[in-house]
Image (tube, rainbow, N blue to C red; front, top):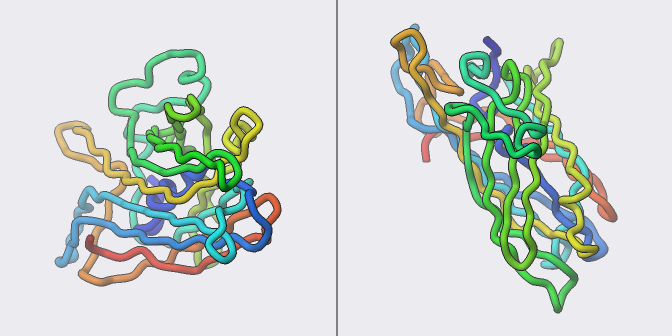
Length: 246
């Protein structure tokens, strides 16, 4: 089983990254608000299933839309356990081939708000996000769906990698599909991305979480690092924290 930071999964979520769009000159910034629940005060020898939440807010310079996102790398420190090997898995290819993902493979869900086209004629598009455990727990499969003003249904896989040393133990690498950068020739600008991961299942008579941790005291902070690459905007790096508690 892999060890990752409490924010690890959030990152996954984070990573659920999909496209923001290049609609204006200037730098794009990202605000990260992430939490792990429930609060776990006593330290025990048994891990507890946890829910990780992550909200990303994107903006361009002087209130303009964010630039088109190309890649996101999220790095997590040590502290929690990611139990992907214990869960059924799904892949982007299976979804594209109209095959149902196995029961129990969904590990999270969320919403986002996109903007299609250039101001002042841009239109907002509500987005639904679904996250699935990848094969052997080595990736996260994201499904991005929207209905109006454009029909969007795009699955893609994001690998999880283990680092050999240093502060960070695990990373989620998300390369944004080109189809999520532009729709019908129009750029997509992401305003926010809000997702939670908190799946659990019974394994050999015991409840196991996709993410588990031994302790998460009130107001504790766990390091989280993110690198964001954009089209027509400078790369954005952030060192931040995930909070224990809502």
